Image (spheres, rainbow, N blue to C red):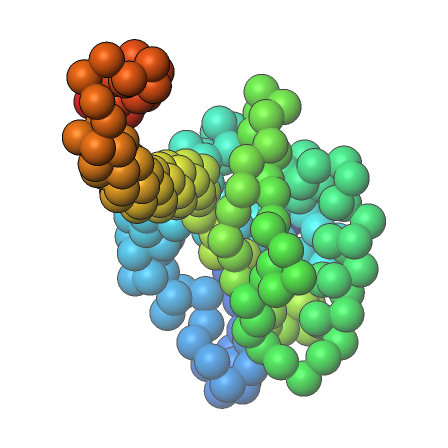
Amino acid sequence: MERYCSASRIDRSSVEFPRVPTSSPNPFGSGPSPEEQLPLLPIIESAMDAIITVDDQQRVVLFNAAAERVFGVPASEALGSSLDQFIPAKFRSSHAAHVQKFGQSGSTTRTMGRLGTLHGLRRDGKEFPIEASISHATIAGRKYFTVILRDISDKQRLESQLLQAQKMEGIGRLAGGVAHDFNNMLMAIFNFLELANRNLAPDHPSRAPLQGARDAADRAAT
């Protein structure tokens, strides 16, 4: 039976490697064999980004500690299961088509989400935004896809807060400019009223309304 192991649990005593004569070529191609890759496992396990590897049937064969934290699913449950459980239902068909197309392309790595924000699905059913890149390799005649992803919820929240702060700063500058222009107009009105008041006789009937206009201009300025 095919063995599924997480990087956090894999070791030489628990991994079944194919036995081949020493004179035989490396069945895993020109790259390092699985045994030679074991020193990389602690690096994968300690990575801050989630790392998930699936086979050509989209079954999870590697699920590091960061992936456990991001999706809220232990590796023991994730291994051997379909990758679909970590993808929102509305994106599953397009994701499968993207992976298939990528596997048939000549590229070995690609940044995902060029046409929009990608989303993952946590165990509790909550969707969250991610950044991701995908690569593929053929080992012993089988194709494997590895996705490296990170939760960018905090990044997007901070960007939103920064944008809001910039908007408020812009509004503040606009309000300051409007207030400055308004005060300039008030000063012109005030000076005109003052001049008009000086040219009137003490008992002129227009003095009272002019004084009222001056008082209103004073209140507006303050």
